[in-house]
Image 1 (tube, one colour):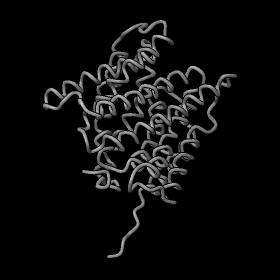
Image 2 (spheres, one colour):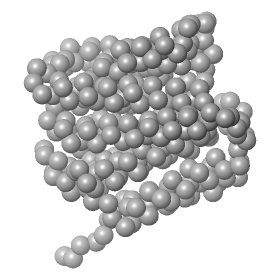
Image 3 (cartoon, one colour):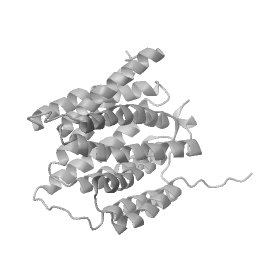
Length: 302
């Protein structure tokens, strides 16, 4: 299937799958907070990529899929892994300077990058007025959710903000790169495996520079958190996400990622006793309306 034959609009199966994925990704923020109690953040991210890569290798061996290509696809796989590794390096390094709530908002600029990039670099994925309006509404909903939350002002906060914005651009660039050069040309498991495998050395280097100690303690909760981040999120959910990227419009898929920080706040309220604000009640309808506009399909005659 060529890029032109990718499904332009999301069917009910894709929508349900995306909601489940964003639920898993939203809970991942809670899981990371648990693992941070015993494992340094960037090393935990590298460990996650290592474990998920092992799962991917086992899957390839069982299904008879090739592990690595020997043509230009190997280069594309390296580029995807490089972008992914740099993205997470920016996220974790940036959080040394800025607040977590601000980080989430900035990182979720990514759908804007995808929507605009798809308009210029992908055929058949145009940026319409309603799609633009939907993305703006959804992003306003994200701001509404975090509006009024206490922030710790730091002199160097702008450094962290810039790094989180860079992470958003890297995330969007990764999605666009996959759709442009890899979708429908290789098996989704290879796209998934390349991203994780080639990100490992980058994350380990960043961890070596920033984190003098990698492991502080290990208990059941921390181990379960690492398992969730590695197997459930990094392996299973990312593999499904790449299958969706191979089959559907990336700008419409990316619009649904706005649900992730919403769910992240909800799970934080439930499991971490974080404050539940009225702004959440305002933000959810705005996100939902934005997604509706992004996926609005004009009726054709006949």
